[in-house]
View 1 (cartoon, helix red, strand yellow):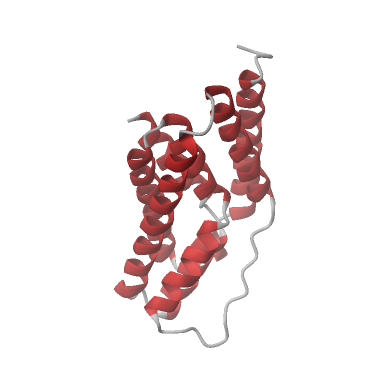
View 2: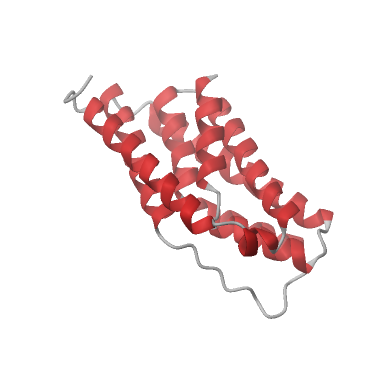
Length: 187
């Protein structure tokens, strides 16, 4: 159960202001909050989280316990860097109406992001990939549903940069703490 909760929180917070959330907000406004965009967002969140959790399961049996903890610290470090990095999104001039194309673009963006890497690391560290996948899928779906509901207002009214920098600082501190703990420097 902890893997579900940790993956849920990691993906929910890691997705705030990310490129996939900005894409969903844009297409939500362009489609006047069409239900298809929401469905595409939820499907992409589920696919990416479950795929990363399964990959974590494959790695889990190969790593000793200390390496699993260090993997989580490294994933947190990458998530902190991504959160601190400005998320830029150039909206297309003519938005596509193809839901399949939206799903493909979202999944491609999500496979390379820090939040889904955390799902991978949590699944590997806890040995509970199914729960980590469900938690990651729910966290991603909730974050993308919020972007769908907000539409363009997400970018215009929300201080995304300040939120992401605050989350980056907290994630970096957690990465350092877990990394030092994995090395036995602190307990």
